[in-house]
Length: 372
Image (cartoon, rainbow, N blue to C red; front, top):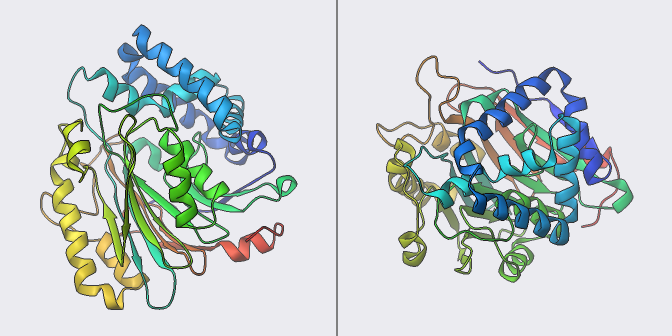
């Protein structure tokens, strides 16, 4: 069974926080390099295509112009882990590049995400992170703080070697965001989802501000977001490039898995060949049914029980085959309580792993004062 998660504290500028990841976990530096370079090796044929090289160059220029903190953090990651900046950016764009190449059917990362307004105030924002198995050892909870910028404190879950809210996060105003992977042919130059999620937590106090941000900028395309805030507002966003984001304000629940619900986006979806894609509608139906049944009494314990559940062919809690180190599986479950800015998280499958608790308000108070 994996060890309980400890907290990685990252303090300072975006570049400094990127560099500090390697310093915080020096024993894992080589595993980070192996995971990242292994992912690049798996898409090497795609990377060698001239149009992909042009696209990555345009994305790098876009990042530098539109998201300097994201650019600097990713540059700091490259420096800290002994990689080139281009290698880090290519790794972060790997799913997009594979979608664009459309060469062969592929396996796809999963994830089941939802948000629900609770009577006690605020919302629960929840995700099972179904991702490549080698990231199990790299998974961390990160506390981001930048006292010099008087910025909001961020509590994020992701992987060493990856920026900000690589999987999910919550800020000190109570905005939480989680994502799911969805492949699409609708890609172009714009905000990559991982940088977007971090920017939303950095810049926005609530769901309304986040949705305004999303609607105003171009996107690289692919995937969905589920958001909730301390006021109890919830929403889903489906991300494309040529097609504008499809924003769904949802009361009391918002849920997404690994397929588009909008017909126009669904028509451009890249359908992978793995069980996660086949199970996506069934997992979504399970979540929606459970929320309809338990919505009036929803709490952390009920959320944990749903995410630890199993159903033949469409298990929300996903297990890899025995002995597999790389097959996708549920690396963690997160349950964010937005009213109290609290994270409940497992470092492994939620059905058999210890739950950790991190209270952002307590952590931030020991670091520096932040804006509301």
